[in-house]
Amino acid sequence: MKILKQIAQCLEAGDDAAVPPLVSQALAEGLVAKIILDEGLIAGMNTVGERFRIHEIFLPDVLLAARAMYAGMDILKPLLISSGISSRGRVVIGSVQGDLHDIGKNLVGIMLKGAGFEVIDLGNDVGAEKFVAAAKDHGALAIGMSALLTTTMPVMKEVVERLKAENLSERIKTIIGGAPVSQGYADEIGADAYGYDCAQAVAGVKKLAEAVG
Amino acid sequence: MDPFLSRIGRGQVLLADGAIGSLLMARGLPRGAAPESINLSHPEVLEEIARLYLDAGAEIIQTNTFGASPLKLAAYGLEAETAAINENAVRAVRRAIGDRAYLSASCGPCGRMLKPYGDTDGEAVFASFRAQMKALVNAGVDMICIETMSDLGEARLAVEAARSVAAAIPLMATMTFEATARGFFTIMGVTIEKACRELAAAGADLVGSNCGNGSRQMVAIAGEFRKFTALPLLIQANAGVPELRAGLVHYPETPEFMAGMVGELIAAGAAVIGGCCGTTPDHTRAMRRAVDDERRRRGDSSI
Image (cartoon, rainbow over all chains, first blue to last red; front, side, top):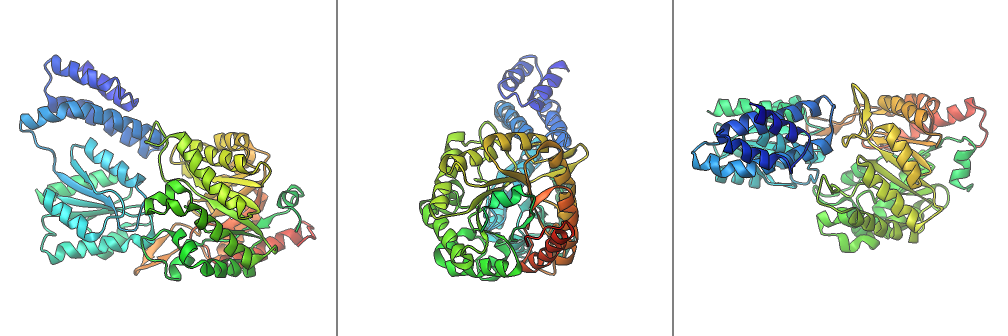
C-alpha cells in the first residue's frame, strides 16, 4: 500500500505535520486502524530504531520521529480502543531512584510504544516500591529499569526482591539496562532480562510478554 | 604562576585532576542527592579532595560545580541556591590550593533538551549558564571548563554565556563521543569536525573530549581533533567503562594503565590531560610521573 509507505517515510523523516493527515487519508481510503498502526507507524519506527542502532541517525532524528509517531497514534488510539484491539501489553518503565538520567529510558519508551506496547513511564528517581505498585495498578507484564550511575543500580535488585517477596515474579517480569548495567549484573540480581540497547530492550520485552502469556 | 594560556602556548603539557563524584560518595554523599548539595553542607570535604589532587601533582583543580547551573539544580529544587553553591565550591578549592595550581570551574549539561528536540528554549539555557558563570567568575576562578556536552547547540550556549561574563578568561570546552563504524559522534550526532569549528567560533580557547569509553579511545579522538583544529586540546578520559562487581563499582583502567597512555595522548596533541569518571588521586599521581617523564624527554625544563 502506497499510503502506508508514505506514512512510514514521513515518520522516519520526523515530519509530524505530515503524518496525521496521511493517517486520516488512509482511514478514508478504508484501511483499518490496526493495519495503519502496524504497517505504517510501527514499520517506520522499526526502521528508525534500526538506523539509530547502527549509528546512521542520532538522538535528534529519533526524537522527531517519535513526535511524528505520537501524532499519528493520537488519531488511531480511539479507533483501536473502540474496535476492541488491545495492545501487546503494558510495561512500566523508569530510571531508578537517585538517577536523573532519562535519555536511555525515554528511547526505550519510544521504541516500546513503536513496537505496540502500552508504556507507563514513571520518570526519573523512581524507588522500588513505586515501580512495583505501578506495575500492580496497571497490570503490567514487565518493569523496565534504567540506571546510568553505578551507585543507583542496587535499586534494581530491590525491585526484583520485592516482586519475589510478593509472589509476583511469575506475573511481572523485570528487564534492566543502562551504561553500567550488564547481563552479568542481571544474572547476579535475578532480573529476567537485560537490554544492551533500545533494540535489545524491545526484543527482551517481547520475549517476556510471550513468557507471561 | 605564569598565566595558563601562555604556558599552553609555549607547548607545555599540563595535568588536570580526576573525578570528584566518587570521592564525595565515599565521604557520605547520600544516594540520589545532588553532588553539589555538599557545597552548602560540607564545603570542607571539597577542600580535602582538592588537596588530595594537588598533592598528587595536578596543576589544574576543578570545582564541584558540574551540575550547578540553575536549570540542572532545579531537578533537586536547589536552583535558588545557585550563587552560594558555585561560590562555595570555588572558595573551598581556593582555600586548598592557593595559587599553587589553577582553579578551573566545571560546567556540565543543563539536563534539558533544547527545542525542537526537547521543550527548552535556547534563551533559557543561555540565561541558566550565564547565572552559573557569573557566580563562578565573581568568586575568582582561573579558568572555565565546559564538559561532557553532547548537544553542540547547548555547548555553544555555555561557551557564549561564559564569554558574556568574562571576555578574556581561559575557556575549555569538551564533548563526549562514541565510536561508530562511520567515526566518532556524540549521541546527538555531532562530529569532531563540527565541534572544532563551532566551539572555536563560540570562543573556546581549548577544545577536546572527556568521559566516554576509556583512555585508548581518547588517543584516536585526540588525533581526530588535531585534524580539524589548531587549538590546544584537553583530554579527560574515564578509567574505562564501569562494571559492578559483587556490589562494588569497578573501573577497569588502573593508574598504571592510564599513565601508560599519557605519552600517546601527548603525541596525539593533548595539551591538558586529566581524568574523568573513575579516576582517583592515585591515577593523578601515576599520570604526574608520566607527564614529567614526557616533559623531560622533550627537553622541557619548566617542570
